[in-house]
Image (cartoon, rainbow, N blue to C red; front, side, top):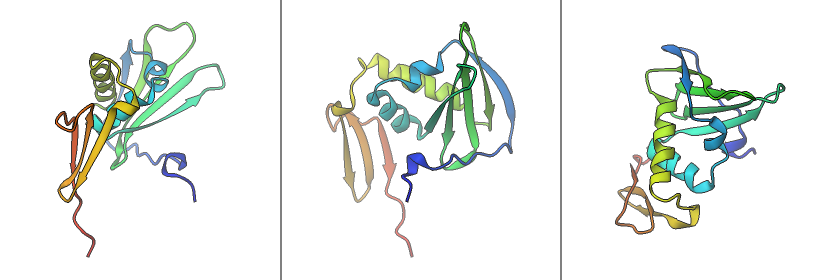
Amino acid sequence: MMMRAHRPVAISTNGPEHELRTRVDPRTIAHAPAGAHLTISALTGLTSVTTELKDDGFRMWARDPAEAGQWASVTWRPGQHEFRGYQVGDRPVWDEVVDAYFQWVSWGEPQRDRFGMSVTSDGQRVWPDTPERVIAARPQPPAAP
């Protein structure tokens, strides 16, 4: 069985669509240390996939795994300083990824080993350095019937 991260990404093009432009290089976020990815996932609930393009380009996709119609992709091409992207859905997916990345930077770029998770009957909490500094909390899902 394939691991969840290796399964094909299911997306939908149903929903509002628009192009976007950003000065944030998608490679900066995609190649950031694991602490950045943990922060982005914890703060946004989004997942990402990257691909190298045949023309030496690079593309990063970010999506809401719970809603196939909420995603964004941004493409880097050699020589560009502004990057083009595409977004589907009402959720500002790319903006959330960028905001979470820079939040991680503002915390001093903590590595993955500085994060912890507390799991109780109420749910789970993700925190850097100390359990009192919760950055994300997810309630416990209801028990299956």
